[in-house]
Structure formats: structure tokens, C-alpha cells
Length: 306
Image (cartoon, rainbow, N blue to C red; front, side, top):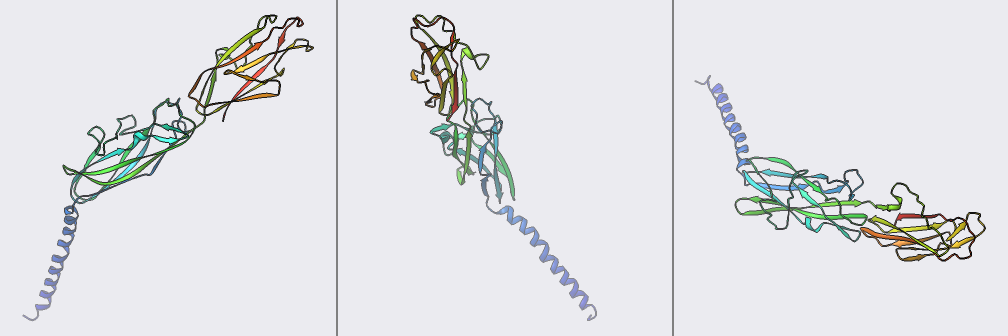
């Protein structure tokens, strides 16, 4: 009986060790799944809008979208969740203007921007976690409507992403900011029927004995202030073809008389989405007694962004 005691003790010891190790491992997994549902969210931070061509927001570009990722984490029991995005209606502020944007559920999807803190079935992004540990990434997409006549400059704004645990009665878990910024590059576009096919044109004043007048209408589309510089080769005079005599004339731009007797004249124009009519008028007084022949001058207009 005594010779078998050591072996028996060894077997009993090993058996006892097995009883300790195996149940401990199984209990750890069960405990994780049995814990109450815990969820959290964070975002990738700031969305710096680059636009279709990498220059920022351009009103003439077609609509496009850029993604921002939300990271959802979960431990514990299975549970449902949903997120609500608020504050989008405030837009981005900058340069004295507001640039409107939206947040979609897909690159060309539906808007999920909500005004109500709990959102609606149409604006919520929702899902469910199984029991245990899990982490998922949820993409949202920032977009800007084309054709917004805003001033050039830098714009920024902030939306709020709210994460709810959905147990029948929504429970707010966490809110995180989503910062959106965009740059609007300065842009100036000038057109006129007289310059439809070229950057130069000839204005025929006809016979000058009784005076003459001609007007060219420019359309200026700009998202910044515009400065127009006018210069006259003849310094405000129509020069005879021989160069020996001249007839002075007057120029008004947008109703403002300009003095071309110096090298150039500069007129600042207030920024506007469109200067629908920006008339340039040349008035020549009566030229009785002036020498016969052809008279001409060259006026150069330069439109520049402030």
C-alpha cells in the first residue's frame, strides 16, 4: 500500500491542476459576453475639402464627395445602436459668407443631416453588435452643392455626431465633433459680346463731325473684389493717322468717369456674384474743324482679383 502512495498523489495532483485551469479559461470568455453592452465612437477628425481638382471648392465644378470615417467599438452583451449628425445646417463660415454642405450615407447617397437630436428613421445610421468585442468603421461622405456664389477665402464649420444605445428607449452614449473646412479659390470671369471670339476688338465710332458714342457691356462673375485698370495709348485722345492732331474723348465705366490723360486709371469694384451689366462707354464731343482723316486710340482693360 505504501509503494502506490506516490503515484496516487501524482495523479491526484495532476487531476486537480486540470480542474483549476480548464474552467478558468472558459469562465473568462463567458464573463466578456455577459458584461453590459459598452459602445463608443470617435472620428478621424477634420475633413479638409480638396474638391474634384484639388483646389478646394469651385462653384463651377460638378458635385463630388469626400469620406470621413467613424470608428465604433463594442464590448459586452449584444445591443443595437444608431448615430445622429447635427449642426450641418449652419454651414461653413468665412470671408463674410456661408458655404452650405451636406453629409451623406454614400458617395451619391441620401442626406443624414438632422435637426432633431434623435434624428429620424430617414437620417439615422443604425446597426447592431453581437455579444463579445467588435470594432467597425463607418464611412460618412461630405459634399457641397455646386453653383454657390460665395466669396473666396477659407471656410470652416463643425457638425456633431451623437452615438445612441438603442434599447427601446434611446440612450445617448457620446458626442464627438466633426470639423469640416474648405478653401474657396479666387475666381474672376469676364465676357462681352464684342469680344466673343478674341481678346481684342475694334469699335467703329463712325463720322465724328457731330460727335459719337459707343458702349460695350461686360459681364463680370467674381467671388472676390475686382479691380479694373484702364490705360489709353493716346492718353484719352483719338490720334489722327498722321499723328499731328488729336480729338479728346471721355470714358465712363459702370457710370463712373475715368481720367485716361495719365498712364492708367484704376477702379475698384465691390464683390458680387455677378456684375450683370458693367458698361464701358466712349463719348466723343463734336469735332467741327478737325482735320479730315482717320482717328484712333487703343484702350486696354485689365480685370484683376483683389
